[in-house]
Amino acid sequence: MTYRVFVDGQEGTTGLRIHEMLARRSDIEVLRIDADRRKDSAERARLLNAADVAFLCLPDAAAREAAALVDNPRTCLIDASTAHRTDAGWVFGLPELAPDQRARIRASKRIANPGCHASAFILLLRPLVDAGLVPARAALSATSITGYSGGGKKMIEQYQAGDDPRLQAPRPYALTLAHKHLPEMMAHTGLQARPVFMPIVASFYKGLVVSVPLHHAHLAAGTDSAALHQALHQRYAGERWVNVMPLGDPATIDDGFLDVQACNDTNRCDLFVFPGEGQSLLVARLDNLGKGASGAAVQAMNVHLGLDEGLGL
Image (cartoon, rainbow, N blue to C red; front, side):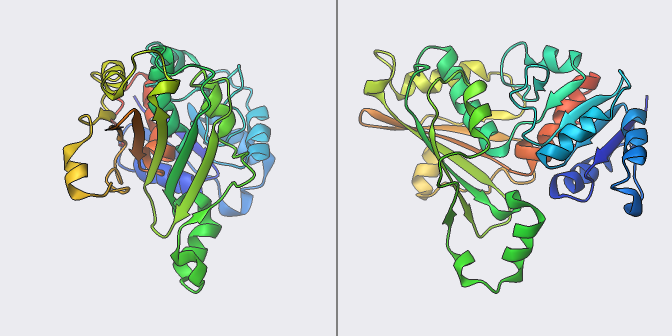
């Protein structure tokens, strides 16, 4: 069977990557809009309603407008913006979120694609909150180091121009502590307190690592690094794309550094627990354009259509 797919916002970083993934497949007919009609609402509406699956790779307001153009009940929308990630009418497109999440994605025609930072954070914390090891009221902090491709075309152009010496150093941002991924980070982990979250963009194209430090004294009684690691291992046993690394990951410790880019060009997310005295450091690593964006969207499409999740990935 051939499925018709339209990418609204096909010229953006996420849209282009989705097109690359779909080009590998013989079961997909890609619907394209002429460049001079990209802002033509009638033409966009025609293509959106002609599609079996339509990806919205647009700013939030434009994604809401696009969703309102769809009246075909058979069209499945997968929104890559932040517009619908905490909307009760949309299913969160992270198949590994919970045991029933794939069934929910399969049944829904409205799927909200997770954010890159949020995907890493949620995959780390949701199993630990569900297991009662990390209290829902815990006051957490998180740091994310990411490649500049996550900033979209404008930021990519700034970095690749190479004429601003400030871009040679890592750049912390979202210093108002109100990053747009925070609502979904809370909603889909079950955390009740907003984490203190600081992302950092650095001078490499792609790759992302989120780290969350934990004091065992603030966790459920008797929780240590081994218990945290075991909870992650049990939750993701058999998962194709989530890889729980050995406790303390000796290979990383021996090398002395964590390779932020080791998941690039994959749909994989690696999870680590690094133990210390009375403390643990949780780390999640993924490709911010793969499992953190376009790869996640294609995976969600495959789940929705009942196909092999790895098609195109």
